[in-house]
Length: 363
Image (tube, rainbow, N blue to C red; front, top):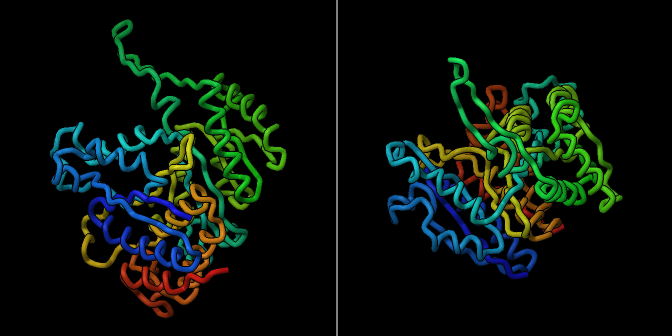
């Protein structure tokens, strides 16, 4: 299968972690006979230095015309003093808008080898943590009307929360499609006991469920969901929710896994062309020192294969290789706990990438 992947190496540790992810994709290319071509794209601080723009138009065009985009990380203190509309992060916002990606999908998965890093009790972790939060990305209260005015001598602030049926349906469909590729369980999270927007959300989700009879749809209020994520995360497979609720719940979910360096993410829209990136930042303090953890980026590449290219076997092969390397006791510094130091081996970014690539086997 022929696929063109736009590659944004970015800033800080971005070039290092993306480099290891590309080696993994090359191994998939060799084993499964696919033809991946890579188109380099400048975005973030490196683009400001080179072009005077965090995302030049021609770079955005390369992303929009690709089959999917793999991103490392952008930003760093070097660009803290540039004008607000020229900050590296503005390139990322422009990229999301240009690609039309309205769904952020963030897995929360505990790797059994790293279970001791979770802040949850062992009895809870032992039941398993492996779910995805599908968050609406470009609507809701963050994109509603905002104003502050003076009324009767005091300031009053207003932030408007608005969703249309179309906006709910399109994110709901991503939720159902994601569930179809997993365990066919979807939990729709809202606040329908209080909010009109949530009552509409619930109504649209139940209407949409008739198109996906294989998926078991349940409803949960957001406050209860926040409790259940720490009480029994094993009950969840896919959670779909609106922008602000998803922002909060996805951060909570990433925390219970114990390691930000292991977590990938994707942003999707109306097409199969998605944006895939780890959730961590550019870590400029360790850039170029071969200390970064490439696993979040490697797993982001696996998500790209699974959700944009429908290559489930290939994605499984990558995830199985990560698990095998962790089983063998190899750790980058961020996932090497004090109790692991006696029986685990500290490795750098390049060696971790090499070990994972070496362990990829065709199923």
